[in-house]
Image (tube, rainbow, N blue to C red; front, side):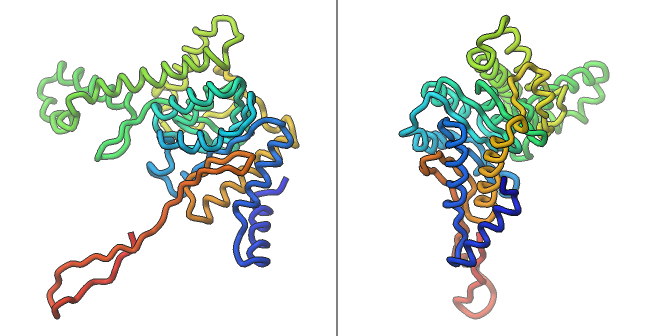
Length: 323
């Protein structure tokens, strides 16, 4: 297996020969090799979330366009997904899962490094998850975004319940709580509760229908597993990594990546080549299959002229900033 550094050297050798790194050629070579090894249709969904971050790297409904593009022409019925994502919209993930499960009868998700939040939900909709010793999933408790930042839905609910208890026992504390409670919108608590219910319901349904379909008491197992992944009290941090051992402890069908050395080499080569593409170029999201069909989202820097009236000679302008 070429290591991260060896694939970087491969890119640098291309610069020496042609003047430019062959990101696409090298990445596609390794995706094709993974497909040849498994004989299964192969898709990569990866974003530059560890460097770029923000909504642009999240799972969103527009990703459906990319998945429709890369699924066209695939033979099926088996699909491998190499998934590297911070998560995003549960609703968009639900649409993606519904689409893929209509096209493929067996889906295997590889997590070469991390699939968090809604990406964990996506992985739990598979028949099998393949993880290495270093791989991680994440809690699926919903996060609400406001002008003050991003907050766990359960933390907002618990804060409100705490305020009620403290003010009921000591009304003099109401003055301290009012500035905090005034930040709550009229439907915020209802939104928090419904978001929690949605995440658990979706994962329960997917586990019961796919990963747990051949198990006794599939519904009960699915509810317990979904509840554990969504439990804010257990995990305490939305960014806390969940190891494969912890996932296995919740009945998740996890295969150790290291059990097949050739498969491990092929998957990690795809991951390394994809991460180099994302970190060294303008691309922030890559959705691609083994047939070299790709849907790539790039982030570009624009020069925008900005004029601000200033004291001094007429028509004097400040320098143009980069946005």
